[in-house]
Length: 254
Image (cartoon, rainbow, N blue to C red; front, side, top):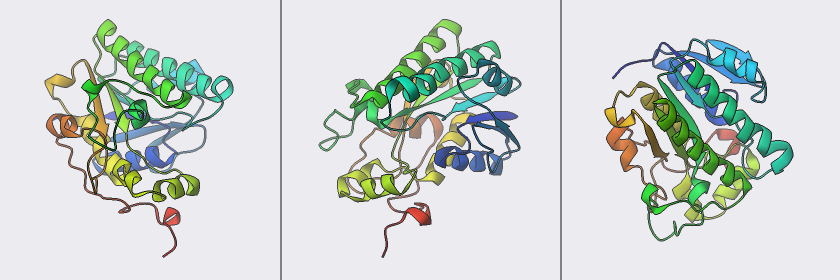
C-alpha cells in the first residue's frame, strides 16, 4: 500500500470534503483543497471555481491523487447550476487529471443513480444497472460514464464512488431522520474520511482501470448499496451506524 505525497480534494470546504481532508491529513498526506471558499483542515487552500479550466489545471498540477467531491448537491436548476458545476466542471477535472497524469482519480457519484431500484427489498449491486431518480442523479450517471471513458481511453485509474447520505444541512438531516428506512443510506463524515483515505492509498491491481465502489456506514437493517467490493479492494470497514457521528448541530432535539 502506497501513500500519495499530494492529494487534491475538490469541494474541500463542504461537509464531506472537510471530513475527507481532515482524515487524509491525519494519515500523513499533504492535502490541497479546492473550493469556492477557504477550506479548513488542509495544508494548502486554493479558492477557485470548477467552471474555470485554468484554475482547475493549476490545482491538479503536481498532485498524485485527485478526489473530486465538488458539485451542486441534490436537485437544482439544470441549466444554471447542475450543468456548469456537475457536467462542465467534471470535464475540467477529468481533463486536468489526464494532462497531469495523476495516479488515481476518484469521482463522487451518488446512491441516487440507483434510487429507482428496489433498494427497500434488497442490496443493490453495480451489476443491477442504473436507475436514476432526478436530474441531479443523471449528472452522477454522467460522472460514472465519463470516468469509464477516461480510464479506458487514457489508461487511467478512475474510481466512481456511490456515496451514501451525508446530510449537509438541517433540512437534509430532518429528511433523513423522517423514516427509519433512510437510515440504511447513512454515511457518516468519519466513515467517508476512512473510505477515501483507503482509496487514495490502495495499490490493489483491480483498481488499475475503471471501478465503481459504494461508500456507506453500517446499516441497521440491510445495506442499500453493496459495500463488499470496497471491503475486498480497500479493506474498508464502516464504523458508524446512524446517528453516530452525525454533526451535533444536525441532531434532532432529544
